[in-house]
Length: 292
Image (cartoon, rainbow, N blue to C red):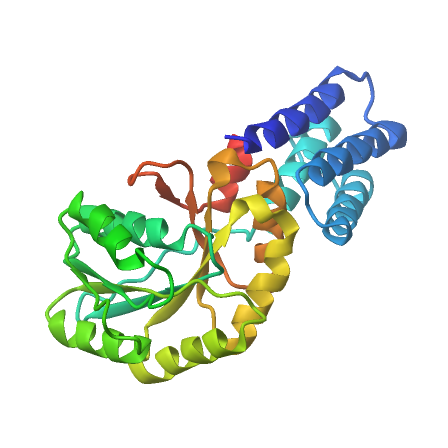
């Protein structure tokens, strides 16, 4: 995973702290500079980097050290806590109500990995015992329905779509009638850019007609901090309940995507960590920071 570069840089910064004889102001300032460099190389937004490094410096130098730990251990603990806070603090699971059918609508820009992510999420839920189905409402991209069918056939999940129908709302409504007795129905929508008004209107119509339990935005981890403006624009059009960051396995800019999205307030619930259909994992900020 390209994010390992960020982890390696952070580890090198903390190793320096372990080597110095005393944790004085100069040592803390050097740690902060190294931290800034590592985060900027991972394409994290400059304002967020400055905010985080300021908190690390202030806490490491001014905070009362709890009994039983050294100033050195305290400095490392502060870095861990601030990075975790920066990425969303705690894991927020996807809630599936066992007493009803749950409908989740996936949205995102073209090429974000949304269709593949829909199949990955279907597999994740299927493995946890939920009777899951997929609906393809993408009437714009040639082969979108065929792609979803091909992915779903590998995991024996049914898919509804209609290549002759151009009305996404009609397709979604018909699919929901077909999958009435399912635990979870995932609706894959057409990829759209934040400036494509007709497609944004279609997304709003889908939300108003089918009333999904949650709208999940899929973001391409390779676009780095640009993810913030995309997420904010989609969130303005329809309420984004959560985020899945895809393609983190091949992105040196993943830190930027993660932090930018975390900054808009919608929790990151999953990250895509590879090309296989099993490569989707729940996002747990403390565990993720520990791994880094």
